[in-house]
Length: 315
Length: 231
Image 1 (spheres, each protein chain N blue to C red):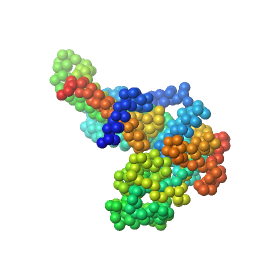
Image 2: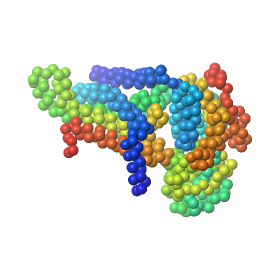
Image 3: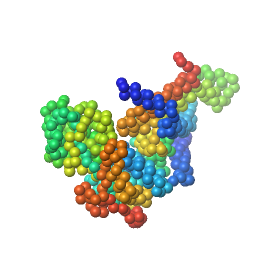
């Protein structure tokens, strides 16, 4: 009897708590602006580019842009679950899966740069000047020979950068699972890009990195870029609105408007210039005009989406 | 050492000049933790009272479970509440993921066990003599319970403050449920995690100093209400 009373009162309290919280949220939202939720890969967020873009967008429309930053893995996962309206990521394989599975409306390439392989100045494995896959293979061979001297630090967090690392091992004719368990030269950090760089610097190891994060951290690092602008290191950022067909609650209209800002003249100009005044050179390149180079088809590449795309998808 | 020293100086500057970003994040952290603690108190104190004053089958087991949940890792609660509140989860319709309201739900779940357990401990700390003398003075059972609760108020206050401290300093729920959205769900702990990964060590240190200071104040308050001051 007493146990029942306890159970029922506990349940009632939890329900009351949920309703209060929900009421408070919708109450706060009623007299307020619309909300656009974006999940983004850390490199776009940590460099501050997205913040600039948000400011422009919030001036254009009466909307609050709320950005959740994480690796590409979790950013896509939020989209799959319908928890965000738009994803900004950089892993073409998983992007295509996301769309094929019906979660995404369409893919728009809006920016790119190159991954770089960075390492200690004295380059103990001697990879400078090599092609990326060859360099990775060399790091592994040297690492297995002298694990105290040559190390590779991996993100190990299913991010877009981590996905690219796996592709590079594959391009070198190696099996990722074998590589990662082949000795203590391979350090599985399980961290974001910034912390991974700091770790590689402390361990005097090599790592794969996006240019923008490397530039942001350069001053704190005892690392230098050893391989740059290699075509196997191309890093393309794409925006995908979450499809209202699967998740009716998403704010698809606003997501489409945000994509259209990214690919507009204003957005592309901002991307092409961003970083010039802080570090002296742009951190990203605009996607427009470089469609063939970055492997995005014509309608994926810096093209505005139709206003009616959402209702069409939902129907 | 230079880095820590310079960081400390910059941190103090940010705090003493009431840097708007620092103030905003601090105020939000306090509001969310206060809300969580208030709701958790209305759950934990009656629940602790029920568990203490009534005997029923399985009581010991429930208390054991509550005590186990004291050290519930915050990321576990974060993950659980994330799965519940996500649009694809059973409570997705409330739309609470990535909102301060969602964070309050998560933090409440996190601190209810420890507050309930400490309430029980507080009530157990009042000897049977108090109850017996209350009853011998003609108090009804209800009045006796009230007397014990009044006697235990200091220890129960400590339970509330400890719950508040845990809510304020946890990072798992805040990060996974709040999403660390600037100007909306960014609190002290998630801001420290972000700014550190961004490389802004001074800002992180400023927030860290504030967090430690608040914890210190809360701890002093706990000692104060328990009648101890510096001892």
